[in-house]
Length: 247
Image (cartoon, rainbow, N blue to C red; front, side):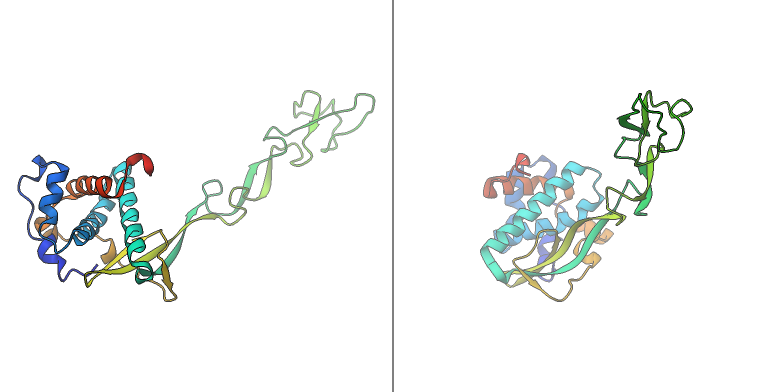
C-alpha cells in the first residue's frame, strides 16, 4: 500500500480515550480524517494486517482475515478487472504422517496393523501360512487366522506414504498480490483469494505488504490491533452483512 497520502491520517497519533468508545464511535472518529469511507476501511485493514501476525489469538486472526477477504471481494465487484494481481507463490505444508520423507513404514491397511488375515485356515487341510510356518507353530497369535498376505504378518508395510502419495507435502493454497486504486491512491494486499485479473509476472513477496511496524510508527498509529479489529467488525457487520457465523 502506498503511504504517501495515508501517512498523515493513519499516523496522526493515538486516539485519546479510544478504549472508552463504542465500535460505532471509533469508526466515526477514525474515518472522519480520511477523504472517503472506502479509503478509511482500506487504511484500517492495511494497519491491522501488519499487526495481526503477532496476535496469539487464532479466533482474532480468523475474524480479521475473513473481513479482509470480504473487503477485497467488494473492491473486485465494484472495480472488476481494474482490480488485478499477480501470483506470488504456491504454498505447501509438510505431511505429518511421513515427516516430509514421502516413504516409510506404515500400518497395513489390509489387516489394520494386526498382522492377521481375515481368512481362516481351512481345518480340513494341512496348509502353511504366508510365512511358510505351520499354523501350530505360528507365533503371530492369529487365533486361527493366517498372517496377512499383504504385510506377511508384520502389521506394517514399507513404501509410499498413503496420506501424501509419496510427495512428502500437501498443496495448501496459492498466495496472490492484489493491486487496485481508490480515488487515485494505490493499494497492495496479499490474499489467498484470486483477483479478477491475473498478470503473468510474479507478484512481489515483500515484508512491507504484511511486515511489522517500526517503533516510531506504532507510537503514532491511530489505533492498536484490538481497536482496529473492533471497528472493522462493526463496519463489516453493518455495511456488508458480515457475521462470525458466516465464516
